[in-house]
Image (tube, rainbow, N blue to C red; front, side):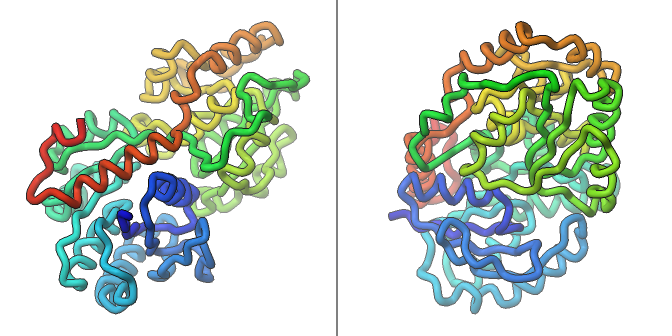
Length: 390
C-alpha cells in the first residue's frame, strides 16, 4: 500500500479533508501533518490524528514563515515515530520547503509532489519580494516529481510563463467527491423550490468584501425578490465587521459552517443560484481559478453565476450553462437576473442537469487512477518523463 505523507498549511481546510478521502479511496495510506488556524490542536480529520506543527494566522505571511522555520528545526523528531513514507505531497509553497527539510532530516530521498491550488498574490509582484519568492519556489521545486494544480489558467498564466516548475503537471480539478454511494435525493435534477424569492448561495471560504457588498446592493435593489444565503468560513482578517454587516442587511443571512460532503446536497437544494465569483485577488488568481463552489453547485443543480471574462466564465460558456456577467455591478446583476421567472429558471437548471455527473464529480475510479500515478513516481529515478502520465 502506498504510504503518503501529506504536509498541509491548514489541517482544518475542507479541501484537505477531500484530498485525504480521495487518496484513501484510491488505496493509499495517509499520514497527515500540518499547521492549524485554531487555538487548540485538531483531534482528527477523517479518522486521522494529524501531527500538529503549530498554529498560524490567516493573512499573516511573516508569522507563517516564522512558524515554518520553527517546524523545520524539529521536523526530524516530529516525524521520527512514523514509518518512512513512499511519497510526500506538499500543499503550498511553505510546505514544499518543509518537505525538503523532512527528507533531509529523515535521511531519505522520498519523491516529492508539489500541490499548488492557488497562486498567492505575493508571488506575482514585480518587485524584489515577488522576484525573490519566485526564485525560492524555483529552487525548492527544482527536483519535485510532479506538480498538481487545479486550473489550466494557472499553468498558462503563471507556471509556464515564469518557468517555475520543470516537472510534469497533473491537472486535478476541484471537483466534488463523496466516498459514500450517491443517495437518491442527491439527484441533481430534483428541485422543488417555490420562487420568488430567488436565492443566491455564496458558500465556502468567504473572503471577498467586494462580492459581499455587491450582493447586498443587488438584494436591496430587488426589494426582497432575491435573497442572499451565506454559508462557510468568513475570513475575518478581510472583513472583521462581517457579522455586523450581514445582520444590518435585510436580505442577507449567514447560516454558519457546513460539513462537506455530508451537507452538500441539502444546502445546494435550498438555493437557486450559486455565486462562483471572487474578486479577492482580482486580475490574477481570482480570474484564473476554477473554484470548488463551481463544481459543487453544478453537481447539485444550482445555476452558477460568474464573470464572463474569467476562467470560470469561459468554462461555463463552453458548456452553455450559467449566468455570465459583463460587469461587476448591481445593474449588471439586475439586467441578467432581475426579470427571472420560473420558465427561464427551469431552462437554466435543465442545462446544468443535462451534463454528465463526471463533469462535476470525481469517482472511485478517478481516486484509484490518482494513487496509481503517485505510485508510479516511487518507481522512477531522476526526472519523470511527461509521457509517463499520459
